[in-house]
Image (cartoon, rainbow, N blue to C red; front, side, top):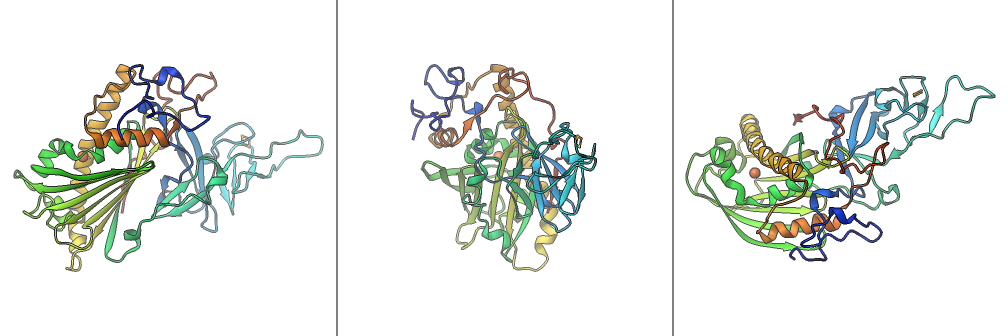
Length: 396
Ligand code: FES
Ligand SMILES: [Fe+2]
């Protein structure tokens, strides 16, 4: 697949304004394509939605109040009281209900109002409630389904067998990155950027073995070998003496399977991956120029008991350093887009041209939002920090 006139067509009925198209190719500017809401997206770490407490989450500018009822079940409601629009995430959990902090209207987990304490005969007819989102908990994350709720039951949660396997232990990442989610997909899939990490991992030589593309996914396999330079202890531990740690070579498989991304590393002659990474990039703001990255890094336990425990902080430090370098690059890309007002990238790598097409074809237009009726992308402005900005943290 390459960038053609067909690329950038949205699904039927989802016409995109001409201004969002590149006049030379007719393609939609990928950085103006929204994440398709008809998937399960993580919006919080489970541990941050504490017992009998509410939590302010967000998906693409839609504020979502999560709360954990007394039974332990997590519910997700539109984060505004139907009465006077005060965030329900400021409310109080009572049993399985959430009570607004202002005039104490109470909501069930499906968003319906269950009680208005002072309502009496002769008062006006109250609203029915607010939107309730399908919600599930898995892998230490809270997932919501922000799209058509009728599609939620048929949409699978990601399948991560390594997460529950006794052979693996999971390190969790949760970070805001100030860029459109597409830059993240491109960054991970394009291993030709190892130069960026030369100070951390030494000289790595990635050789693209092959790649496959279909309507929903792009999968690339690279052969990684160490070509000299400094070796990082964390990298060696992570790859069981593979990447950067010895002369052995590793096969890295990276896959964008809309809307998620995975990366597996199998050292030469090994049967199982030394690690498997699963990532979701969840837009935070309405313009989708900021995303929250939720990552699960499932690391194979070495044969020596306790060795992984000792290696854990080194692996953490190594991965955080690599991530910080990637973040620096993708945020610079977003700043360039902001300054130029359009995507002037001149990409040459066919694999990346393919993933851009997959992200375009599966995405949706970013819809106008806001009281002024203006498009959320019309003025290049963020709408202030999301409830999750500053919630950067890690776990695991
Ligand atoms: S604003 Fe929520 S009860 Fe009044
Ligand atoms: Fe990187």
